[in-house]
Image (cartoon, rainbow, N blue to C red; front, top):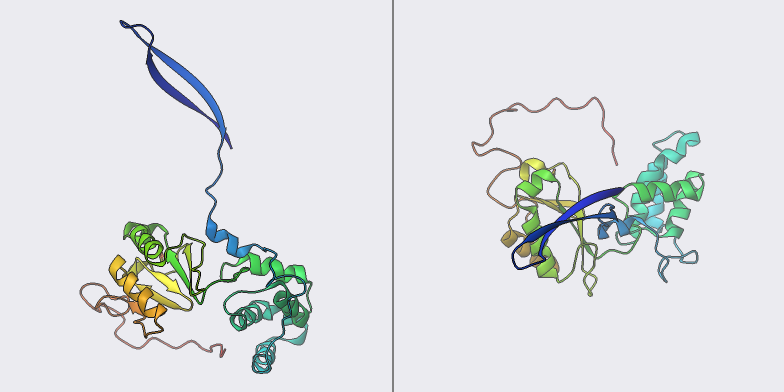
Length: 249
Ligand code: FES
């Protein structure tokens, strides 16, 4: 978007008078480039190109068949997202072109459809990520509760910027939008686990534990239980009514 900005400045033209000068400038304005966006775009590398082999392992082929069995045979493309997720997990947290091709082949759809879905949903990483994918939420509730300090603590401790991975391949750092845990803000997600009610100190402690393959405390990093308020539980004392049916993945 083109816009105009009026820049006013004062300059002394003589020793007695000051003349106000007005300069009009046009400039091109665009959204900030997010380095985390690069995880959803294809970058041709030695590990991710048309010739990189991919096939599901024998164990995962059993899971593939189980997932497919949930859908009528003529609607097996409905298994696209769970199969992409399975392929990504087998591949160490990211998905290659050939893995998407394999899933497309199983679902009986055009490869481009699999590429589109994997590029649209941020749960799929189109480029290699570290063993621990650290996703810090920086949406408004988390930002108000201090997520900027959490990102800074991660950056400083890991020695990398947002969208980058550590040299040892252990960590990738990303900023993400709301993860649905706002009540326990600020929070970060590492692989499948949420860590909530973070402080810079508890964040660094978690990163150290993850680096040393130690057990971490998942959920709130304070004494808070789940998402209870400061007065403890005030509602929902009875067990919830179970759903009429549930998916068994
Ligand atoms: S704003 Fe961070 S989890 Fe919702």
